[in-house]
Length: 126
Image (tube, rainbow, N blue to C red):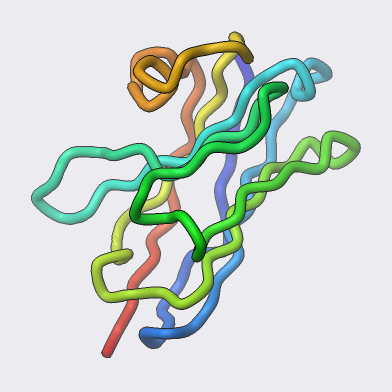
C-alpha cells in the first residue's frame, strides 16, 4: 500500500478551474494505477478518472472537462478540472490500485483500490 494525501480543493465559481494533487509515499508509486473518485452530499462515492499503464479513462461526467495526469518523479497524480459545474461539488479522493490492467467494469469500483487519501473538498458556486 501507499499513503496518499490530496490537496488543491477549494471554492470556485461555476465555469472556473481547479487542479487537485495527490502526493504518494513509497518507492513503488509508478507501479500503481491511480484513480480519482468523488462523493457528493447524500450520494455514493463515484468514479471520476483513472491513469494506468493502459492509458487514461474518465467517467462520462468528466470527459472533455477533466484531465488526469501523473509525475512519477514527484510521486504525484493530478486532476485538472475545467468548466466546473455546480454538480461537481463533492469531496474528491485519490486512490491507488496495484493492478494496472483491468477492464472498465472493474476499475470503476472502489474495491479494487487498496489505498485511499483523506479527500479534499471542492465546492462550485453559482
